[in-house]
Length: 555
Image 1 (cartoon, one colour):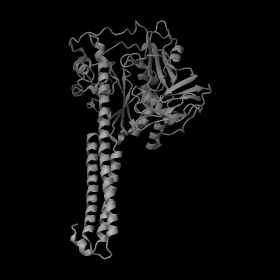
Image 2 (cartoon, helix red, strand yellow):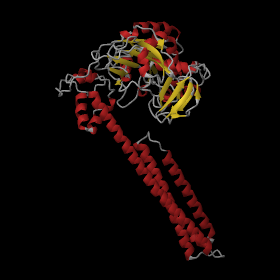
Image 3 (spheres, helix red, strand yellow):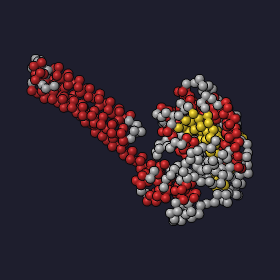
Image 4 (tube, rainbow, N blue to C red):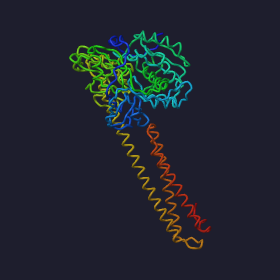
């Protein structure tokens, strides 16, 4: 049934999905060579673990994740590694398509940690466009209680039909992948949100729902409107929940996943198959054979389009992604990646260039269509003026860059371009500020370390002098009292170093909870050890004095 809830704004651009959705899903030809970028996901690029000349199979790990937010990378064809650079790995195929698979797992009886590790090993990331590592997303339950898993099957952007075809061909497998994620995050309810322009996929899901268990699944059909596939918009539409500004769906107990991602998760767990291919929509009026294809990662886009019958004389541009949020390719000598869900080979008449920008006439159309209820006109002025304080006050980072404001602007102002540039500038400033703060902390700890080392040096010197001048009797001379006083000074310096380290650690933790505190905690531990050493030296010096003279010393 249609949802009773709604989000603000939205537009109704031409769908243009029919050409690619009418053809059946097929396998693209096996490429003879693949080029696999190390950055195909959010976070840090993967680190190569192969060298030129190495033999690999389909599914062999060729690059390991780097840090927390990263993803493994696997060979998508069998053959020989011919080039390894800091940006990509090239494999020359042998045509054998020899497979490497991990052991099959029964997700119903397998423990949570083992399932998480399988997602990590398999390099699964979000295939809807963001590319966030799925094993990290599944760990959100460690900080948030998840009540509902949302399957985002809206696929609202024009031209793209990859999820539509996946749902038609693999409805049961996608629902089983959702059950795996529900087990990992503890969700007690699964909701599918799908637009009403996908009748075949809706019918396939309705039939598959009968066998989906143990978590109950609800299918909700919503009216077609862009951008209903945005996470915040779909959650509002399905559940009437508002994700807070600057927050995540997990803040309201929701986790969202794309159908293609859920299918890849099932393949990784049930079949032991890492992420080496994905469904890609090939469409546009410059293509003779549009449709959806299973494409190996690293396949040349130029070769893929040639196989689909691209007409170069009519071709004006190729867009990776959809026409609203996609990116025009500057060259076709680029590979398919985990984030490539659609390639539009458009003619000039099909997607003409935008007219020349004119001054803003303050019509307010951009505000009326914004799905996040922002003020695009004000954001535009502040972005051009580089007034970053105002941009943050008006919630620039809540903008999902859907392009609805630019689409309706009668002055043809590239509003989203302004917002992207402003976001990049602010992010860079934040990075520089973080670096400066880190340098300040390093300086403070260096000063503390130098003071500690000097105190230790003086303490050792005073101890040696006291040992050399200590008389055979228990009587304590005035010079020994000076030595004891020096040890007390060293002890006080060590205690001050500990207090300073504790204050710095607390201040940094409060200012930036997400920052790694390993270095600061190590510095504090070192200062505490030095304090213990100074206390021991002071106690030893006191024991060396006679009972009478020691009793005269204040504790």
